[in-house]
Image 1 (tube, rainbow, N blue to C red):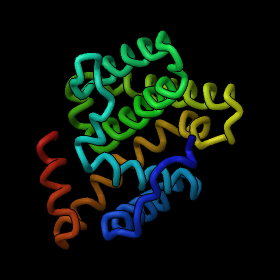
Image 2: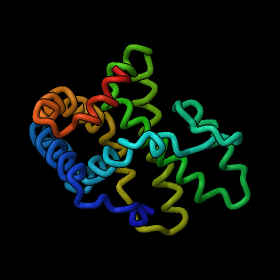
Image 3: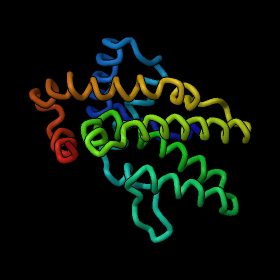
Image 4: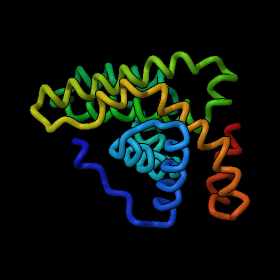
Length: 184
């Protein structure tokens, strides 16, 4: 399923996030090229709030918390032909936990969610890997994401603290910085 992800176009946003991920992950000696690309793509996707909240509850409302995603993941398991949707929900849960614990760490810490996110994200990625393996899919990055989750989350937090300020001053992240500042 990893190969089914939309590739991030060679947009200025993709180049910017690629550069920021590269610099910060190099500083911390974190992540192989596949993980760095995954994080870049994740950041590009989640700049759009509709992508961040794309998993819907039965009423059609965008799910906004990890707890709601876990509930939806349990519901997906009971659906007829729900394996594909379960994989999608599990992957999104891992992505959401990684994004929130990295970019919005101050918010997550302030409300006491950080440990929960650092436990739930890897568990969701492991579940994704297991489900894909069970379907015979080519191994994606999910086992490695699970194993490296805390390091990746910390590297994203570091990137925000160290490099977003510089990028914002250069005018590269004006809109992103505005959106991110609303959460912190």
